[in-house]
Length: 66
Image 1 (tube, rainbow, N blue to C red):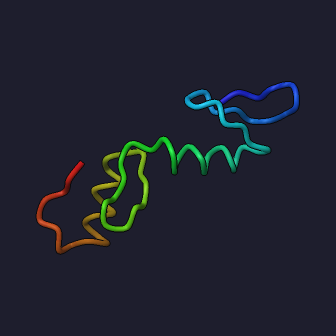
Image 2 (cartoon, one colour):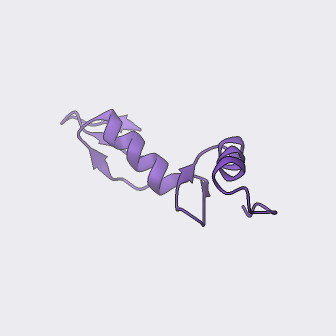
């Protein structure tokens, strides 16, 4: 993330710009996260968070797909 002359936050991966850091963080989590739950479409950056989510929210799943 970088800030430009207009005080906008810019995503270095795709070039999208945001008015504040919170919007950039939400974008980054949703668009550029590494793991997405195929059951509820929630996004995770870390495999530990993804695994914990699946264990808690989808205990019926025997095998976690990544």
